[in-house]
Length: 233
Length: 287
Image (cartoon, each protein chain N blue to C red):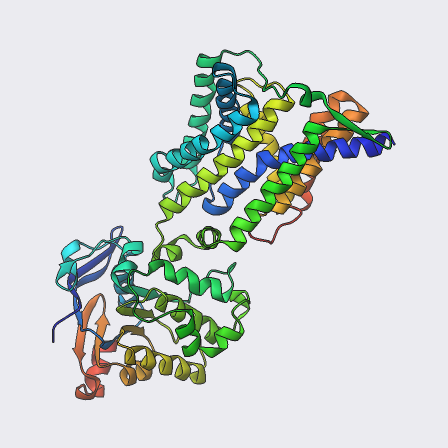
């Protein structure tokens, strides 16, 4: 496998607190990879570093073999790494369509995502395009957050806890959309507490524990015991 | 009839206060920065136009048109070179820096222009007026109010109908998220400050043709602007216009009772709003 995006010994610090201790993760073009792990395992810190929101050393994050760690967030997205942040984080004073259009600021090339294709993926958003974002249901807000990231035409979509707080039926809808997104050639990196959803969607998984990778592999090749041990210690 | 006259004159005066205030409201709304040098930048703008009209002999309106792009560039540069460096999770640093800028501008203007009171000249227009039903409307106050409405309308259209406005509102909502959208907030802030300086220049023009000004006039303009913003509700342009008008009416009514009460009445209304509706009369609408 040739990696498109790769971390090499990634460390993340918040002041004196170290959240990640040398994490190696690789993701290939078009692949879906899930990061699982308990609360505080370092999953969100990992996403923050990849999206440019947390500092990292240049050579600790490589894109196509080029060091990009520490690139500011507004440049990361232009290199093709778009984040769907935990908690959705829509712009509350903007309408649904305005939220989506904000995502287009991060666009550097056209990979086929536009308002039309996002509305095709999530038809309900087209009906609610002029509504204020906070008036939508949690599931619909998650669709806006995913659509907003897609508007940047990313090569890789980072999804941080997208099933958090959603009902099982809505989670199914969101994951159906993700499989459509990967069918269109976009790589997906998931951070997920819902183990079942992660194992079903991912080509490969990494399990984090206390800021380190405790297990990695293809879901079919990992025993439940191994995963349980890597997850809870 | 005289109370109607007082309220009308106060409303027209409120247009000037609204012009002082919208630039301050814009900057607070977009980057949560209280620009303590706002009033001094207004006075600086007036002196720039004074210099253009006295040194080169340009009519004041032509000086205004020339000053507008210059002041936009100055605002942009102040933000990029100075204020952007202060906006790191600490409210105190930008406050201190803009306070420092205020002192530098006041003393710089004092050095160059001396402490004399100056005025921008509009010739015969300054004293022109209309009479309607026993009430006299000065042309300049009417023009000031009309321009204030146009400025507020223009800013509202900019914020709600353009891509730049969308980005400014999103930046106001959440700085870290606007960054992951591919937006460099330092550039957005610089453009916002440039726009604020355009409004500052317009307000400086009307300040200069309506009354005398000198290098120390800035802080009281800041106070009027601040009071209008707080009365109207932080982060709403139309609210700021209404806040300016309420402040103007309060001062006019106070002045009609006793000229010594003019300023006091304005401050009392401001204090009453702080006590009764601390979020302002039109709070809730963002920007």
